[in-house]
Image 1 (tube, rainbow, N blue to C red):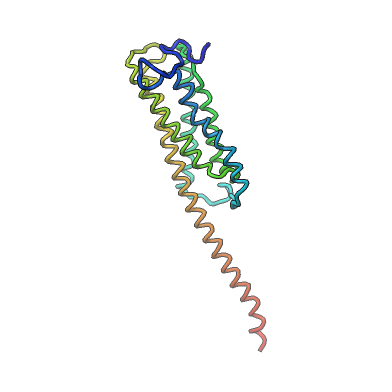
Image 2 (cartoon, rainbow, N blue to C red):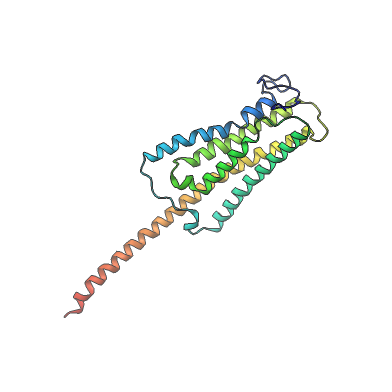
Length: 229
């Protein structure tokens, strides 16, 4: 089976049904996987840049006390990634049922899993500088943009596709995925804010602890002198 099966238009970027947007085959083969490609291509340079830079040690989330806000946000983050994995699976299955082919849509699985792992490992233990910007700006916002383009293109086709996968159902599925990408991008930024706030509080407490321990040590040194009279 070809990449796009029996779709009404071929691979070519120029579409007569959804002009000026590209064909659905081009969208599913080139545009939808594009954020994943860009993310993967950005990681090696970021890794090399990080090795040339002095960076602080990164504690894992398990080593720091979590607030309820942070915990709920993290759960929502991974849950939404799972939702998009399921939405992608649903679209792949239903496209296969009508012999429309799936293009390179399965490649999106890699992006979702890599994005989740980068977040879970905090940029693989801090070894990838700027990983959160790549996740947010390239993968999540990029996923939102390309899926919005796909929704608009499907809507512009204007035809009526019934059967096992009606056109209206596909538009709904892709629109949901686009919305989820947008919410994940917002959560990524929110978790960054919470993480910065938590690190600042932790550093402040460690600083106060160092001051207190220093004062106690000086007190211990002075005590014997004061005791001899």
